[in-house]
Amino acid sequence: MHENEKLITANHTSTWPGSINSARIVIGRQSHCVNARQSITSSKSNMDTSGIIPDIIDDKPKARVTVTYPSGAQVDVGKELTPTQVKDQPTVSWDAEAGALYTLLMVDPDAPSRSDPTMREVLHWAVINIPGNNVANGQVLAEYVGAGPAQGSGLHRYVFFVFKQNDKITSDKFISKTTLEGRLNVKIRDYVAKYNFGIPVAGNFFQAQYDDSVPAIRAQLGK
Image 1 (cartoon, rainbow, N blue to C red):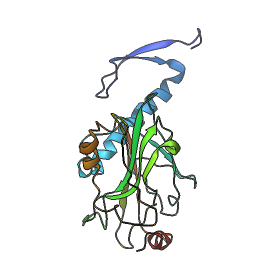
Image 2 (cartoon, helix red, strand yellow; image 1 turned 135 degrees about the vertical axis):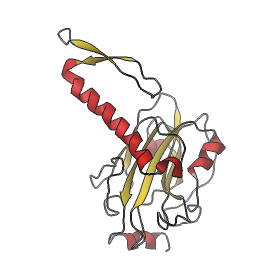
Image 3 (cartoon, rainbow, N blue to C red; image 1 turned 90 degrees about the vertical axis):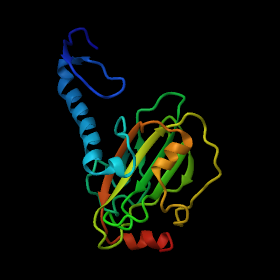
Image 4 (cartoon, rainbow, N blue to C red; image 1 turned 90 degrees about the horizontal axis):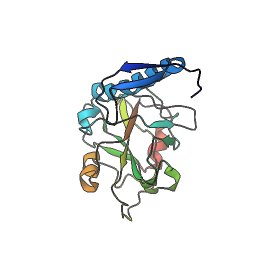
């Protein structure tokens, strides 16, 4: 911080872990800080209003995970994207602790439809033992599969969660991107219970409905 930058002190009450009641804000950057706080609050609120809490999990993520697709599309707390935009594996990042290991999960809780979710949840992606937020160096349990909602099934929610691990996870499980086996009726809550995960450190989601790219995705999975 430069010496000529002035500070103001603002009282701020937050339910977020690690928050403080008195926040020092640089006047010149005040708008940016407030916008960031509003963005995070919006993310948590949308998890509630969209039904993700409690459809999938009971606790709100602590922060937002950044998800950017090769198409240029970015996941933004419930924004609708097309299956075409999200067909390829995205880049994912979050604020990570040095030396910590993380698990990244992506699920669709709305298969075959949100009104009749008998396949809840469909596992679209799972990576464990991620050092920091370096997903490429993690262990893939389930290869990435893009959104493939059935025609006429309406909007589906596609949800990303990041969990901090307590220890390294040992698993020889591997699900190829060419199969549905092992992907149906997977529960985030089961992962939380099995590995004693805490509250998700980050989360985000988008919504998507059928477009002309879906038949190719379904064919890839043998459907």
